[in-house]
Every structure is written in C-alpha cells, then in structure tokens.
Amino acid sequence: MTYVVNEACIRCKYTDCVEVCPVDCFYVGENMLVIHPDECIDCGVCEPECPVEAIVPDTDPSADAWLALNREYAEKWPNITRKIDPPADADEWKDVPAKFEKYFSPEPGTP
Image 1: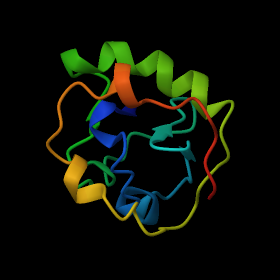
Image 2: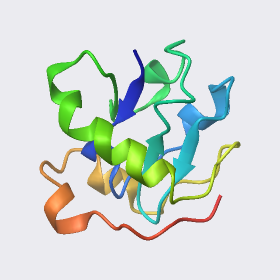
Image 3: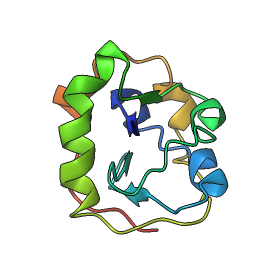
C-alpha cells in the first residue's frame, strides 16, 4: 500500500506533509505535490498533516485515478524534503472542487 496526493492539493500546495515524511518521497510540481508510490513506506504520518485532506491511501476508491499521476510526475518533478510557504492564495483554493482539468500544471516546481 502507498499514499497518493489528489486534486485537492492543486493550487493549495501546503507542504506540512513534506515536513513529517521520514523517507522524503514527495515531489513538487508548479501547483501541487505528488508522492512516489515506490518510495512511500505506508507509515501514514503525512495524511493527517494535510489541511485540505489531499492525501489518501491507495485503498481509497478515489485513489485509483491518482496513483498513475503520482507515479508519472514523481519521475519528472524535483524531490522536496522541507516545508516551504504555500502560495499566497492557497486558502482561497481549499474548497474549490474539480480542479484538475482547469488548473493542473505538468510543470515542475521549486523545492
């Protein structure tokens, strides 16, 4: 089992989860994070740290669509190992539904 990041992270990009990860399996895109499923050790410490509940176990029915995306972009984006400030407008994006199609960016971020 592994954990995955879903579209709730898009444009919020809080990094509280990164701070607690013991294996540094988070990767940063321009406007979201992903978890490398082969590096995640399934400890679960990241899940409760996410203020927008964007991290779910891969056993969650909603995770199926996100597992492949997390794997793909973890191979392309840089590793992030420490907490950084979220975007200035992150709180405005917390409750916005269906963000992927309109707002997802495949561009790498800066750790």
